[in-house]
Amino acid sequence: MSESTSSKPMYEKIFDDVKRQILDQNYKPGDRIPSEKELAEEYQVSRITSKRALELLAAERIIVRKPGRGSFVTDPEADGIGTVEQGHARPDGVFGGDGTSREAAGKLIGVVLTDFAGSYGTRLIYGMEDAAREQDCFLVLKRTFGIQENEEATIRKLLQLGVDGLIVFPAQGEYFNAEILKMVIERFPLVLIDRELKGVAAASISTDNVKAAQEATEYLFDLGHAHISLLSPPPIDTSAVEERIEGFVQAHAGRGIAAERELWISDLTSTLPDSFYDENIERDIHKIMLHLQAHPSITAFFAIEYNIALLAKAAVTRLGLRIPEDVSILCFDSPQFRIGEGYAFTHMRQSEEDMGKLAVENVLALRENRPAANKIKLPAVLVPGESTGPAREART
Image (spheres, rainbow, N blue to C red):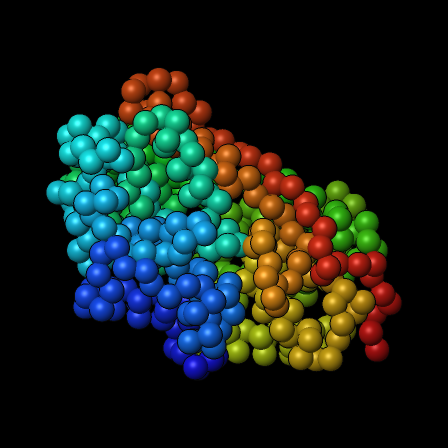
């Protein structure tokens, strides 16, 4: 089985397969499950893919990963996290590390994320976990896969569970969900991360995307690139995307360089949570290839996110062009650790761990009626990689 034959990302298929085997009792509590290496060989994928599948299983508390020993099916009695039911801790079985009941376990914070990966999200969770340990509170993590209906249902379930506060990474969409608006009106302790929702007075913690995009674009200018193609999904009122586009435009204005909008592609959809299928990926790669052929003046791509940078890389290499000699690529985010085929993109690294820590600290401050900043913008750092270099003359 290869990564290109499935209708969904292979890490999700591995996740689903292993989860099903656990629910079917093929692996029982305390049993060791196959390692990253074993899963990679079985499914004929990279260890990055199998590692992500195991990270997702661990995030849902289906398995426990023990460094140097392997990954094991959650044992409720040994690990003190409640009974596993359909891959989640039962609402009536949330426990503290010492086996105490929910009532005695301390503060409980619900975390609602679209998804997470090595390129972005994993370190965000690490930051939350560190802050939760310091603050003696507990986290319940749920993923929505970017589907707004899932987000609404998840928030309702967590409120029914009795969480003391919520941290939400909102799903991308034209409208925010009604559950978030209700919490704002009722002054429930809520912190949004990564993005803001227009017209909603909710506390938020995100990257200073405008400034980060400016710095990234200026870096390309300093390398001699004047004809830069912006690659993005449709903004759809998503603040992070809109702000990065704004920063890109402001950088051009600051240098007196025309922002050539005809060089942009702003309708790439294959990286959206509900569109991550092989046929959509191929469609977007082909779109970038045709665009590059139609606009040979392009010497650099500024990709709004890491997965779009991967699309651009595939398009450039399929055309027989070299990175960065012919075309440079810069993006937001990139896996911190690369194994095997990993590629070091020049990227803007967001302060994920700080964002996660501040989210926990602020939601607790709101719960306790202590002062908390309404809007926090964190800096990003430019990390040079293999994907950028001096601009060459326009191709003919």
